[in-house]
Image (tube, rainbow, N blue to C red; front, side, top):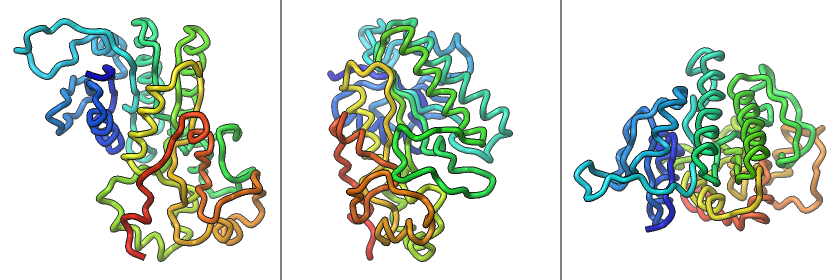
Length: 297
């Protein structure tokens, strides 16, 4: 059996694919979520992340599948992956979104550190790059990298910036490895047939800087984070290699962001504007699921 992973939010859009990827690569996973997960190899423990007591007990629980297993003794946990959250704006009132996302993340990290779980990966977001301004604004530069100043105005992105700071504080306090993934627009395999309408309107995904991450490649990146030790606190963009557009990247910039400077001189013809260079360099990330494999030209 591979490493034992406590995974919050494994029933969600991204989480279910990442959980499946980890299971396929030999990990044992317990899903902590309020909704069930349809995966026969993973048990869901109904857990409210805003309740610190529930989180502490959940992270120290037996991870197996059945109450009639020979032993129900909890075993050491190798990592916590925290994806549970209100996933975007316009679902709940802003203050409730902020409360759930920030307190939930605090509770998960605090419990993991207190229980001695030395590897924690949290889901941050591309929205930290001020995607959901009330009105679109120019960026300071492209591609957006992990050094970019994150000062977003919306409640969801703000909660993710706070969560990154919470992770950094606990990493400093504990010396544990806590990594944040700034996840791009997550695409499930069945969604690629819809991309024709995006191509018909090249400006539709301007707010997202035309970035995306295939849910299966997000699984790979999560696994690489689990296996990479010794970074302390760190943050990585989670994006595929190319934009979600048929147009060359420089053409997109000239048409939609003509006044924004380029930070790099070697921008690839279709290279993503949510830079994944750091994840590739530090973690060895190699995205396998380009949209070009699945969308008819």
